[in-house]
Image 1 (cartoon, rainbow, N blue to C red):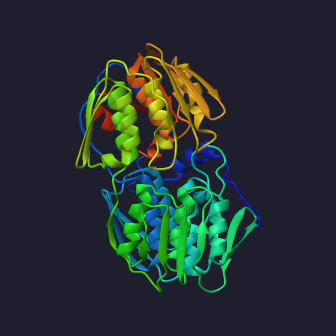
Image 2: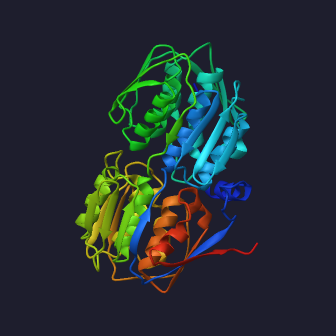
Image 3: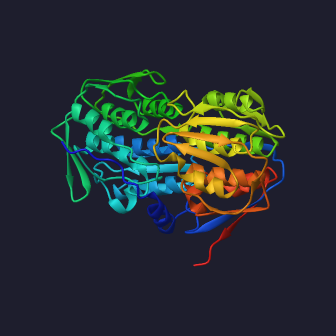
Length: 450
């Protein structure tokens, strides 16, 4: 069986994504720059919306049942708009209002996700499981998204093959088929991959018999997906553990579901408060989903408070050096790595961090170095020697989280920082500039001339 890795083509495709988007959720310019004036200490309270990494997969889950579905607390971000277009291509009808989304799924979806949409976003690979379960066939282009290095989909395909699917690559399109109904199986993942767990989970709910996912990912977003599937009539045990058991059912029904809060947005605003020496309270969040990240902020000298649905971070005049390694949940989230490195770039002392998930995560380091950061990268390790201050200058956002990290670094830099290719940030944060400004940041968005 052929095996495939995800392509490293995100920079161009993300620009195209912002040019293609339309509709109420698409408020993103093709090219834009975020301009930050360093100096102010952020203060105040800010709420977060639903998690991107949950909302996208729960949108895909609607394909499992014909009828009208409703999702609330959906963030107005570019990736949500792109997933709407993927669903529309399958024949779904989409309507939106504020942070609510309605999806009407046809009785017979078109089992295809075309390359012009799929290559813009890696999350789209999870349509494989639901389309195979509903239609017996799926035609999906190999996905794109952030340029974080090769991320193989072999584990996705292995799991679905154990359930009876067969795959071939035809003219750049991944074609999967199953004879009749998918069959339950025991799928043991070599690594707790979030995407592979989700694909097998979404396939297993309509499979014949029992499916067991061994070494499953334990992320809160997967627990939320399981909760959503449960309201649709799925029978699933073990969410939040490394062993998920699914008893397949004949059919599912549409349901209402509220997307859980975005821990990455909450963590990003927490670090923004910390690096500025400010005092920021984040509401509508689950502090327990950021346990390791908040512990590391405390080690860095921040005052951290936690309560039911809120967290508070007060930053020191200068943070202390901290070591950390990224790991699957409940470890330190790789998507909080760049923001934490921005903080440690101005820490007192030397920090050592290890990136265990994505081999190209460090591609933003050169941009921080332009601002005066002293960072040495060797394989998956980075040594960060804290400097007294950063200096504002023009930089480019290579992906969602690195772009946010560069804006955050600009809060602490002397002078003006201009973060170009800011449309990348729109893929994961709703109104990032406006929300930072509400906390006292001197930040604005400038649309680039054509």
